[in-house]
Image 1 (cartoon, rainbow, N blue to C red):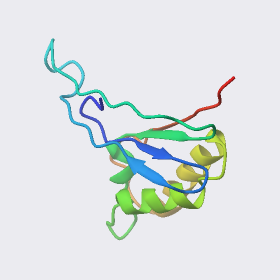
Image 2: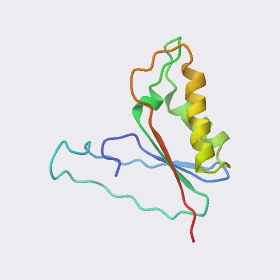
Image 3: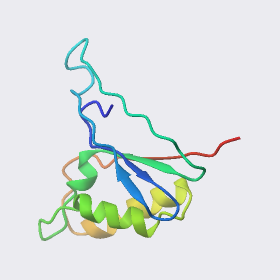
Image 4: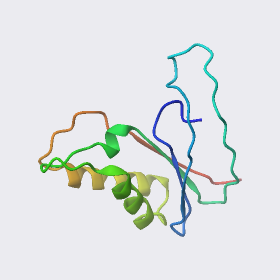
Length: 117
């Protein structure tokens, strides 16, 4: 369930990506809101990337958004990195993109890596 937030990505080390297309109301809007659950099998090194809309809506000086396509490209280009490295690369890409632009919303990203054992 995404609870009204952006659909997260599953990123494998080889750069293969899948977006979890789920729906749901934002957490806290309705006391007993139903949530659709999605299950998947993770392989060692798989990463789940959760982010706020402030990341994809971050603007550069020309008023262009970072957008989902730039996010996909960044995740693909840095898929072989561990969670901390992928997180750092993503925030660095957004910082470079927005240089000279106005940040109007929070930019939040969480990268979780599956490491069994």
